[in-house]
Image (cartoon, rainbow, N blue to C red):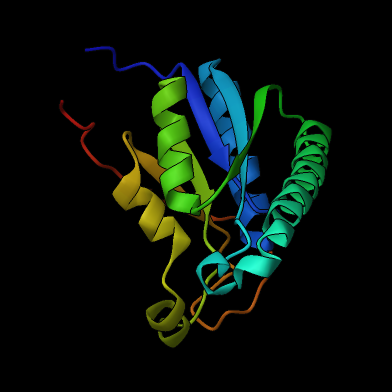
Length: 175
């Protein structure tokens, strides 16, 4: 078994929590000398099952628009990561459900570690909307670092802090 890190996958949406995760991923990649990959997942426009057949042609247009917007966000995030000192080995756009797409890409890239941010939603908001970072941990084929700044606390307020790293590890899936 190889215990060294060779490839880190940073899953980001550009939020305040994700910026701290990006700085964390850069530090980890620099310290270990491994590749840093970036992924942004654009959610697909939903509700096609409820769209009348006469309006289904619009669905393709909506998907193309979502892909263009996602690519624009990915290019922006890639530029911000490079400006912050990151050396990006690959930038990847995925479409669909965030946790599943991040997990699938991590498997394809044979990533050794996934880094995600945490928004710091309240307990009620997490219960109602769920937690993307928690879902990524559940779907990940490798260990996951959930990075959140100290200023992103349970109250949902954002700020900068020295940071807390929360390690969520899963054993790799056996086939």
